[in-house]
Length: 398
Image 1: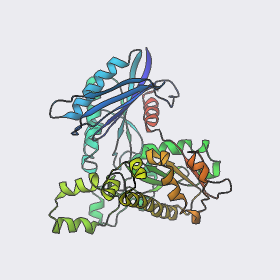
Image 2: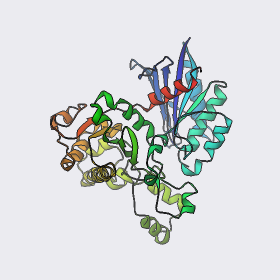
Image 3: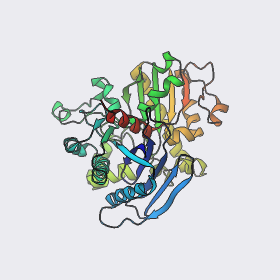
Image 4: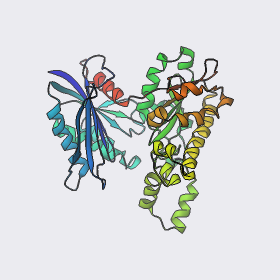
């Protein structure tokens, strides 16, 4: 049987998984890729999976009974893998874990002590960390003895200057761990790894801003392919406007809603994470594709606000790193929404961006003109491959 590495990204309503050939180096394309969506939702859960040729392996509804639908989904996935992994022997499991606190700047092999430590970070990421850990514990029970690796979304940003990680709060609160952590680190790490394939060395290692734009959205400023500043902070709700998240907001708004609208922490959490962003402003959808196709003025305003916030944050990040040599779009919106890229790039002439309309419309890799002082690229991210690669490195003998 061929060796394989399983990657798992257990989120609040979905579980993404992939099975990679366990060779060295790990190939970028998985043998099997899939996800379970709609966990705990009224519409119900569904599993979709395909092999590397694109052949559909499964596309069916799931009946997740019991009081713990996430655990039921994980149990179903384990059974599903046993059915479809014929010919493969899983030798390692790589998990995306949202929060590594200040302790972890690199992936780690997981043991009971590590799980206990990671549980102490739940207050830092209460909407994500418990599901990440549930995935780890489910796989420990289902595949005992198979080494597991935690890869942290915060780790890539630990290279930032100390000053960039601070809030202007009393030191006693900072000492409790309230600081800027940043997220989407696996995506940024992948882009940093492939930049030399697309840019000359001086640009690849220069002042680069990466825009990871999807239902969750953030940006990262790099120098020497290391994080120097990012838009997300203590939580994954700060920074850019997102699908259903507010992004940066005046804290006074929250105090107002507490005092005059009677909203408690639970209600505010739902407002900030689930009712706002593209969905809240448009009143139509959180899906950028639907908004770009819609005629309603509210849809146009939501898209314009999304792009306005990106442009403002690019200016802030460029100031933090002293200029701009390259801008990279990635993530579902960044890779596929050409009108969003155009609205952003047309406002960046002052940073040396000369925009190529035809290249952008064709979804080319480079969407800036040849003479452009700052290069603009569109690169697909591959967080699953980063998980598999880190796992292979940590489980390798010696």
